[in-house]
Length: 508
Length: 65
Image (cartoon, rainbow over all chains, first blue to last red; front, top):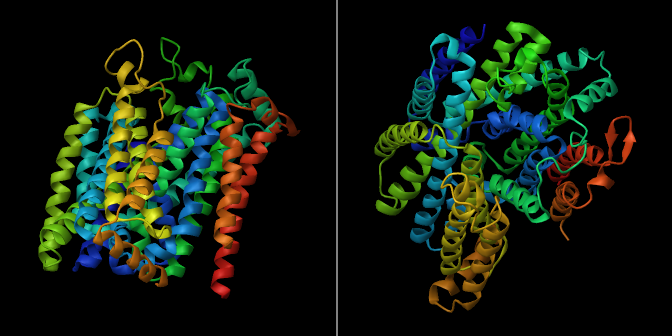
């Protein structure tokens, strides 16, 4: 069943891509679907873009292993989407065209800002894409390994599909894949949740009692402490996830695909509703159900007593426990669709940064014909796809948790402060924005490298130079502080112009 | 203060209660309220109900203006 649905998804999405390609003739079609996506549809697409395999597989695994502490991972997107709805969507839609950089450039000097934003977007997208590809390769190998799909083949399949969606179908194809994925995920978690509860005659008390017994005497299933986070680590993790998501270019660019501010707000609202629904099901039912039905179940343990395929597979095992082989196949296919939708969104954001922000706006200074821009975008998709596939193969054995942490820290420490200050602080200057952006980017990378995830786990040193695994609290603070300090000290003519332009931007 | 900042503040307050509750006051958050649901889980549920509810209420208000 699983392998059948695997091929159905591949054939179906390629078919959609071909249809989408017929609707893609201009740069506006390619990058933002010519603003033709409806508010509700775009909301599902945003939900599909955001909810990576981490939502269903990763968060369930965290609840399975550490219990209650998953609230930080699940709560952060709600903070991020609240920022988007209340503080960002109107200005994004009013001032942006293809990427979030357009908003910053509406008041600051274009060239340095575009180069900086393209650097941070590409850094974020490539690192996040690499994490998704490594995770996807491992997951697909476990799910479909019996059918001859190895890690290498899985990486090639996912990156090839990603390039096909973006290069041939542009934003239309990416959007449709994301909508289908969101609907599949919503339906999948609903059925999984209902089947899990049905196992306990719809008694939460019975399910929690069994799960508490399986989880162990520490009580971490329902109380904090399972991840062993210090106060600073917990806050830094929350800040990184929340501000990182609010500064994620692949999510922000989705707001340019609708026709007006009202539709953009509706998009964010629908996405928020869908994400909240999935979060509640994962936290209260699927995660706890996995502890109750999979933990200690010999059917899902290998010879060493570990979960077959690792903890990331517990929701798939839960699907088997409550729905048998057929439902296992369906959930495996949902996980596969989930991966495809997220990587397509990330790839499109990377292509936009290269083809629109760097080539069209900086190299050609806006003087480029649309056919050439689309052609270049397609070439960029192929080029980036090859790089991502090679990175995915090279990083096969790496722990992807720190890679995700790094990507989020970069978005939180660069894009987020750049956007917020350019939208809300009249004093921000080009010099302050560029200096603060570079400081945020460098700090995030250096602190992750010097932290326990890389310095100890990857390089094999005894102890980390920087003791925290999550650097965002420090890198975000430093980025905001640098932007503020350099801006208030900036007395240049450009600074004067930047401050005056804020008043014009504010009036829009 | 504009209402969008107030709404953002409410959501962030609940989120921060969850974040600080993990390392600083786990025992308080583990106080049982209804059946297996404790204070932490209730805060989590409240955050997930209130966030979309406030967002849709805000969207309605904006559309009416």
